[in-house]
Amino acid sequence: MEHDIELLLQIWKELRTHILSGDRTEAAEDFIQTIMEHGVDPNDVITFAVDSDLKAILREHADEEHFDDEEHLDEDEENIGWG
Image (cartoon, rainbow, N blue to C red; front, side, top):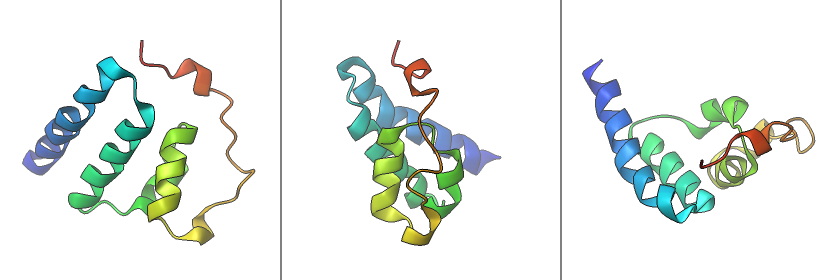
């Protein structure tokens, strides 16, 4: 559990700089980099990617076989905002 808390706090530290600026692409990049540094495989995250910014960064780090270009459309992306 201590490792989980450390990861969550590190994610918060990385993302909070992007909240005010609204830079979703950089936030996605920092998020993926942080979880990878803590041993999370980007291939395991793909099915949970919730928006195009996160998916774009995952495409750079995950295996191509895990992507189906039309499989996960961003139907709810407009509901996921910065505020």
